[in-house]
Image (cartoon, rainbow, N blue to C red):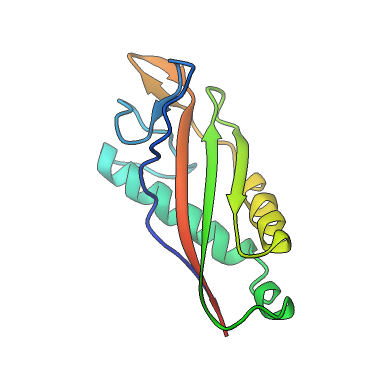
Length: 135
């Protein structure tokens, strides 16, 4: 089973001022189909990314790789650029094949409505930790 946990704030400070953290952005990026207040949009975004993951991620992969059973932490970083595209995807995972699977799943996310700061579209960085349960 694959469990995706809450999307959390990313701590890295960008050298480019135009990229903004998910937590302080005025208008958060919107996952297609999400509606509501800023908090509802954030929650919907997290939920949809989790759903996308549980549908697309090859859940058999961790078992095929002979990883010891238990909980494995995976960290994903990515950015939604000012055009709403998913870019700069990177991951830390317990195995290179899991890392590349995670990255390919992330790249299949739909185009988003980009985040806006002071009315202008900006890039927004995300960091998602999640737990893989290896049977």
